[in-house]
Length: 309
Image (tube, rainbow, N blue to C red; front, side, top):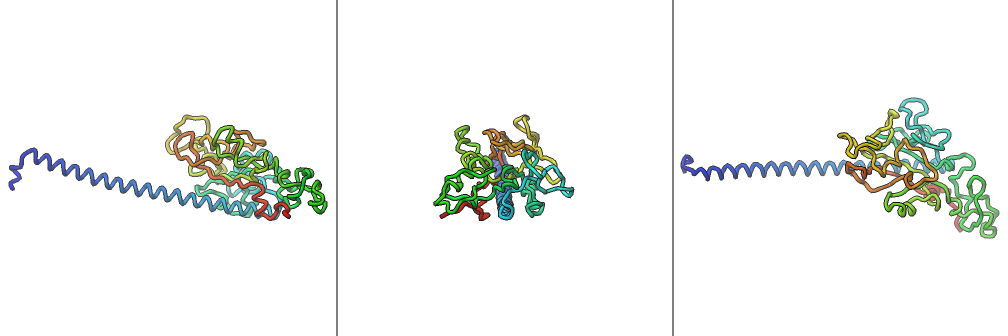
């Protein structure tokens, strides 16, 4: 057929079809690239989630081992001290406030790498100061007894029982009495005041966390880095949408920030948060990871739990 005699409309249709074919091919390629990127991003996130779970598990084991040996928990280290300088990673002599506190990796026998999360930030660490004391050493419930009806001894310790606790229950401290008023509060941030009243770890009711270890997630907002510098992530009362490439700490992340002092007893606004993951660029953002076992959980793993008949 002589192409010179193809009608104009036919030529336009051929050109249009060719253009549509090219657009379709480009769209398919774009979708394939996007799908591959989305899969790679999901795999990267899954890998990081797996890594932080392993990091926190190793930290928990180190803290249990420390409790088994010393019958106390360590104070935090000062997160403002740069790597390679004096006292870095060592627990403070006392810890009433704990602002700037990070995991005391040297005290726990961990390497510095083991005390950082997969994004390179130091792990924030908080603990009830009463559980770090030398006299009495309160991370020990071995003198408490399920048959007891007595009060706690001086400083909140289990009473030294008069054998047997079954025959002399008033000389023995029951676990619930020992645990009440100890530890830290942790909440999932759901339900307002009513939800807070039924929080995960409740110091008043005896289910307080022995300690709280916090990874500040992919954004690193509110964590100290190896140079001893607080990573802002654009923290603070600023515009809702932060500068490109940054994310301020979300509302539920604010109580977890490494430069915040310890508040005991905690109020709703100062209770440590373990909220649902939210990666949106908003005030609802939350990418922290927490370990917050109860005192009784830690003591059971350290073989310092109460007597059971």
